[in-house]
Amino acid sequence: MNSLKNKKILVVIKEFLDLNCHLIASSISFYTLFAIFPLILLATSILGFILGTKDTSELADFSVNLAKFLPVSKDFISDTIYGISIDRPLSGTFGVVALAWASTSVFATIRKGINITWGINKTRNIIQEKLIDFMLVVIVSILLIFGLLSGPILSIAIELIRYFLPDSEVFTQLFWNISSKVIFPTMSFLTILFLYTYIPYTKINIKEIIPFALLTAFVFNLGNFAFIEYLKISTHYNLVYGSIAGILALLTWVYISSLILLFGSFLSSKYIQNKSSDNQNINLQ
Image (tube, rainbow, N blue to C red):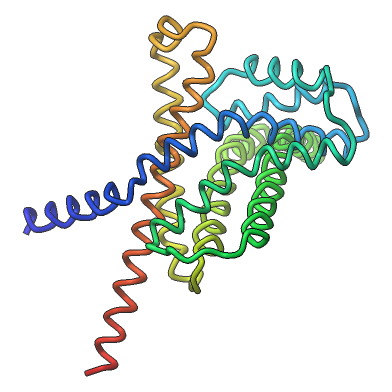
């Protein structure tokens, strides 16, 4: 029985690799190099507009909240965002559109990769595809803004709890610990659920996708935690790659995360397609 299960697992992995999903993950990682900082800068620019501030150092301070979710240091993120935003090569509406356009390449690759895991060869027209890519940029920007504000929002919530319930330090600490650990998993689950439901160019029942989105989000967050902990105890990245160690660590993390995302999509497609095939056979009988 175990050998049969192992064979099935190996067959699934082989089918996944035959789709060249590992190469697609590499492409996602590559395009992320060009997209992630324009995307973060876009989010911080929108955040600055919302908060009514143009102080680049203040916006860079907000960006350090992303270090909770990415395998790079707070200084690396804040210094990069500050260095880019201090020059402000693009501003206004044109700047926002240009930054959004620079970020679409990675989402186009994700979109194509998810459709490949479903075995979908047909494509939407180019206008629809670009609109989807821009929509993904907007959604991720909103999630990034939420991530940027998560620290201040939680701090305000903690202060309010302390004000109205001054003798509830244990509850306050418990609230902080739970909230800070729930934000990123919830964001990742909702993002994966959206991608699995609306990106494939086929009709999908969201109820069938939810278990796979949950499983993928769990593995994704587990992998994220393991990779960040590994970087904390490992020194070879800095020793070998020096000043670009942070970028390479980020790209490695994106590659692993992309594999998890694509494999989860592949599993959901296999399950739904097999279920549909079984239902057709029952109807024929």
